[in-house]
Length: 311
Image 1 (cartoon, one colour):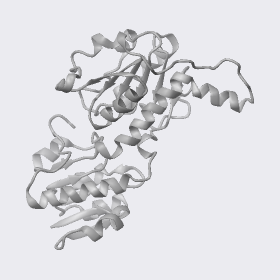
Image 2: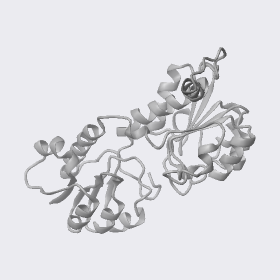
Image 3: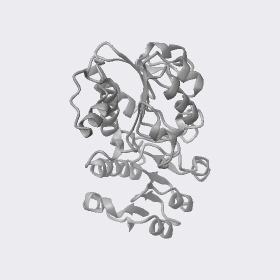
């Protein structure tokens, strides 16, 4: 049984690996591409760009592909399905860090901490706070109430925010995909935490931005293409949207001459949310080892991706 695994996680998993595995430790996408063709198992989250879709494309004999990353839109899911590859991902691994960034963004918007920092840079001492919104008694809509969305909701509720989630099934009192748009005028914060699929691409466009509550903020910690950038730019200039906290953008990285950099009330955090932690590979290693044990035993693994749904 051959496995291609990331060298960056070697010290965390090698002592606990079962005997009988033929392991290729790789540290670059090129090395992964070289070794993956006849592998049964692969984990190819490699620096500097994360999950190597190019390596996965070569692994036509893979029976199980593991990734610690939540977003799997770079992969050819149809091909994985045709060749019978089981894909497991890791939304829970990043949930806490991403949720903290979402709450950080909401707090920054409520208190306009971006303006506070600019005043500090100008050596000014304002007598009136630039942001005076209190989170208590505000309402948040969280589009995508999976592991990351729930973590965001838990943290916001601690601040007294009323949280409504959106899921495909409408489970546990959440809204279904056909119901949330009519409710947009009720929310002070619209948070995108959904997986990127064909159905969620440009899910926030001109109509949605025109329908939000006056003074509402958009917070995107999912993927940039889930928001129509041109529509967002127009809304930032003309309302009723008050502003946007964008951990992700379209395109990404954002070119230095892109108008989003200059848009009013746009707080951009350069896709740093999932990287704002030190224990990602520790959690990923633990999940990989649990799933490896399940794979070898023929029992259900955690976080199996529905290749038809895309998450």
